[in-house]
Length: 155
Image (cartoon, rainbow, N blue to C red; front, top):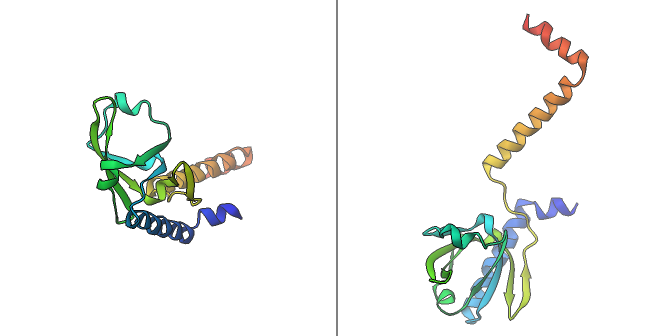
């Protein structure tokens, strides 16, 4: 039952709207904040050098303060901000789809938690479909009588 809720498109859309509204509220109130994100869904422009990204974890915290906060904006369900990384402060524009924000944190306290699951890409859906067909065929072929049926049809 819970999986049906958190994976539901309507629930995800509601969470994205809530995240967007909440971030806009923080901007209007001039409150700096952090976001805990799923790194797999984030884009960096320009891409970060590998020696920087090797230290990143699948779930990563970004703090929006100072210039990073000032450069932040929400457009088309994506939070973008400029940040510096590594010792040399390598600059990159970070684009975070709102669905990839797992938590919004103010003063070390999570004040918003996103429980929705990320949308599946068309590629993942196709992979699941192919996987299901393969599993079905494997089950079918595991019965020796079914193998005979296939051999008869080919002749």
